[in-house]
Length: 550
Image 1 (cartoon, rainbow, N blue to C red):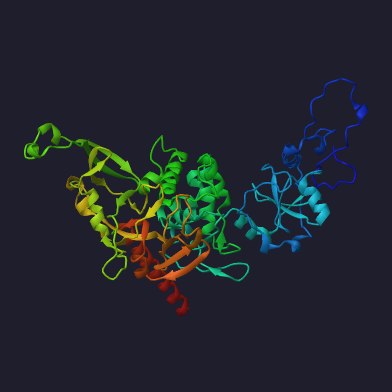
Image 2 (image 1 turned 90 degrees about the horizontal axis):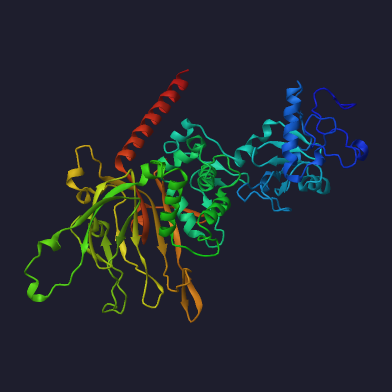
């Protein structure tokens, strides 16, 4: 029944309160439901209040009346400069993650919108009336408790959860885009800084490097590709990538708080913001966790389709031969156990650094070509690993290949030491044909790769504590840092990113860096992108010419 004084276009949210004498003493009564005469939202616990209000709106619609949708006079109080949806979505009062709303005036998070909720009291105490429900993007006026529908709120909803269509995503690497934040700062979508949460530089460089993998990025920019996946790590990674590539962002930086929260839970607190970790180990764990989260145990995923190749591993037990038996060969010793296994990245070893200074009393920084240390995978070079001789030969190459150069090792004093050897590598046309098994090479096999991202380390590492610092008598005199060098494919411009600091660099700077992790893109994918870019530019030129003729 309709409350006295209510208009037909307003849904009744609460009805008269239940009187103490409505029921017989001791008589059990079912809890009131939406639409009952004695229904009241305050009869429910805090966790169900918002569900009750949503049920009331649905009940109003079924009754032939529209839910409250009014013009809000408080929209001018919204402060977009302080809105930040990157943080973990929990109430700042109750620390609960249920029914959390963002105050669009002060930017704080509060639970609930019904009477006696933290959001309700905040609106009355501070005269802040516009709130957005963070899991749906709906905007409400509190304490009046009606939904606000206004086109001016579209930019806020888009920043909460950016969405893209497939056509837009397909052109990200072809069209140069510049954006401007709400404070006037210019930025390039996809090339933005990431906040360091304390000691999370290893996370930032890995995320920056993965944003250059077009197939992986395009997959996660469209949530429909993994809509059925409930894994929190997968969902948070997709959300972060969509924010990194958001052209309408309020600022040119993103905080990976929610992703790191999911990483900490998924890794059972192995990765924490207060402890430094190795980027290579983290990348291996991260890709495998995404693969499992996407259902990798049941079949291929985007991770395996993009990064997974195959390598043949031959092994046998190493034996020490006597000098007189060196010329004799036992046929049994020449037999190798062979097995083909998948890989997500290739690990390369550096030659040992010189122990002594040169004649001018200066330490020599050695250099080695990348192709030289890649001979680990030529099928003939033997490595002794814990009493086993092993040989490696590539059997299948992925669209994107990850190369890790092992720079950090533990010495006899259990201290981390860095090998500063410079690895010279080509930016384009790295040819891996000689490391691929000849029986797997055909006329259609593409074996050339182009570099799209490079993670380097500058400075030295001593201390076994995991910190990147050089100490002199207990005083930190120099700090080693990880930096990501990434290629903006639309501009064909290299950028160096150190957390929030971004600068343009020349390709020559990339080639002389102390490379640690590299991601290469197969050259046929590069060629297809160049052709698509040329066609797009030609079509645009024709369109502009026809416009000028008119």
